[in-house]
Structures are given as structure tokens and as C-alpha cells.
Length: 455
Image (cartoon, rainbow, N blue to C red; front, side):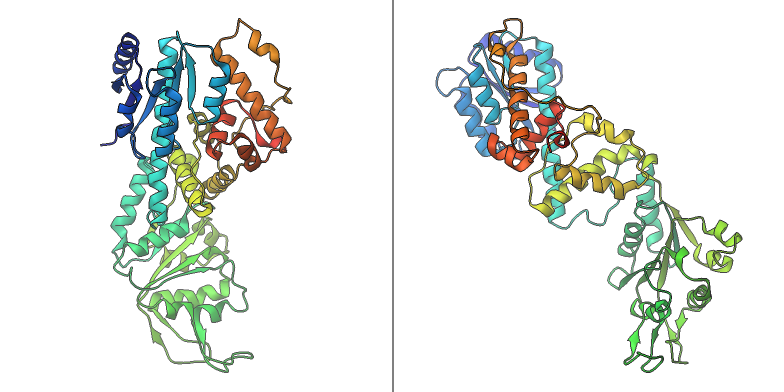
């Protein structure tokens, strides 16, 4: 069982270490204490489900050296550094080198717990998306309905139940709800899975050639028919034919389609010889076919012939619980395609995703995921970011501002300066700051910095 509640604390102050351990154990987190930094290193692995908290100044190996060793094992391991010295330069360098956060003694225990909680959440996210990306690279989860909401679980179960029947299926759903994926899943889970699956977009075929495409033709059947052609229906024999956007099929061809579906035979254009077919027909539409048939826009007899088993796919707004899971899946998929490491996404980002209507459904969500990976969209806030000023020397002399706030302001200014200098280029900003792409994204989210404001 996965347990993202593990914390290693490296601290040579025994009293402080015990206090931190008790505090974290109250929260239900598993905590291990080490006085010597070297002793903690064997526990840190690429898949370790936890985070590291370390004092900076210790006898033997110090916290910065430990951080360097740990990040060599896993560059995305969240590391929280603690110090009793207001060493701003050290803190800034530690953050640039990959520290997750930096806190100064003495610190408020609630603040410490909150920092640990956020770091653990990030660790969970990173490992889960790594595993997801590995499945994507191995070819898994390519044809699967993603999500854990009840409506999604019921849909998966329903598809499983009807897959092995011989009944034709009519899939209803808005644009982008996954009609083509559902059709492929029905085929893949049926006894026909080793036979052809032939998809046809009825709306994409010109009316002049659609009959030839579907039924095939003999040599010389019409001008330009220089050789015999096997149609889609015949090619799908023993397998499944998927008629997407069935509402787009011309009325005159719907008569012939009805005959094919009823009799399971075709005749190639230019031939009188019937060819018997063993096929399953799956059709999909984004409109109400019954209403269309009542209005004379679709044949009523064809509607009832197709409507043996019906699947109504839910729009994304009815399964909002699945949005974070789907978004993570798409991010992992896209990162694998672009050979990029997976960026971290804070929970607030998902909250904003859930609030959107998503009229384009899953397809629209996938587009947002691609923009996110490419650094084109970091959050949905309309608040603009002020033009950055040069680093202010007074920051270092203001005694009313704590070290954490001071570091945050310095870090924000540094990032803003580089974004301005490189006109919003994420790649060039990462190179200038010498930090990974996902680290920059994380920090831009934290400081509400949007790339578009620097382009």
C-alpha cells in the first residue's frame, strides 16, 4: 500500500529533533530522526514515498552537502532546509540549487507542518505521474476510460457487460466526450478483438465517393474505377465497423446502410453478387437521432435498427471529480511524447480546472494539458503581474521582515528579472537560473507569475 507520509529529519539538536518528530507524528506522519546526515542517504531512492528535512549547519556532512547527494539520487525530491542563521545568500543559493523550501529557527510549528504537508503532496504527485508516464511509455492506459467518479466506474462496467454481446451499439455524446475511444474499447473487450476495427467518419467522406468507400466497387463500375476496390464493410468482416457522426450520412445512402445492417450482406458497385458479412456495427452521434428522424433529417427505421444497445456518454461537467486525474494522465502522456520531465501542479490549479464548464469536454481538457506542458498556460487567474523592479538593497536591511518573506521576495524578483530579460521564454529562463523546468513552473505558480505578461 502506498504511503506518502514519510519524513526524514536530519538534525543534530536532539531536543529539536524530538519535538519535530512528536509534532509530525500527531499528524499521522511516519518520522525518522538522524543525527548524522550520512546515515539518512541509504533510505533515499527514486521511488521513496517521502521527503527530507535537514538542518544546514551540522557537524560532519552539512545540510547543503546532504541536499546535493539526495538530489543526485532524485532531482525532484522535496527537501526542506532549516537554519538558525539569517544567511540570505546561502538560502537563495539553496533554493536555486533545488531546495523545496527554507525556514529559519525559531519557527512556528504550524508553519512547519504546513510546509511538510505541501512537500508530501508534491512528492505524491511526482511519483504518481512518473508511474503514469511509465504506463504510457509501455503502451498501457492508451485505450482506457480514465476516472474514479461513480458515473465513470458505471460506464466502464456497462461497456464490459455489453462487449461480448453480438448486439449493435449506438453511442450518444457531446463533442469531445470520447465516442471513438468507447467504440474501440467495446471492440477490444469483445471476442472480435483480434479482428479488424474499422472506423469511418461519415462527416468527412465526400458524398460522391461514400458509397464506393463503404461498399467497394468492381473494375469498370464507373469512370475512373480502374481496379476492384474492397469497401470498408467488407474489410471489417468478422470484426467491428464504427460509423462516427452517423447523422452526417446522406439520406439516400441511409436506405442502403439499413439494408446492409439488416441483412448483413453487401453488393459492390457494379456487381450483383451478394457478399455475406459477419460484422458488428457501432454508430456514434452528437445529436438526438430520434428528434432528427421526427424532423425528417434522419431515417426513423435506421435509427431504431441502430438503437439496439445505447450508451450515453456523460459530459465532463457531470464528472468533475475526474478532471484532476484526466489532466495528470494527459500531462504524463504529452511529457512522454515530448521527452520532458513531468511538472508539478499545485492543488489550487486543479480547483480552477474544476470550476470551468468544459464545453469541449475531454478534448478541450487535453488541449489545456498540452498548453500547460508547453508553458503556455500556468493558471486561470486574470490578475496581471506588476512589472518587476530591480532587486532592492533595502530588503536586506528591513528588520521587520522575516527571513522566509525576504527570501520569497528575492526569489520572485530574480525570476521576474530573468523572465523579462528573456521575454517570457521558459527554456532560456531555466537555463539562466540553472533550475529544472518543473521547478520554475512550481515557483511561478507560487508567486502568481504568468508567462504571457513577459512575452
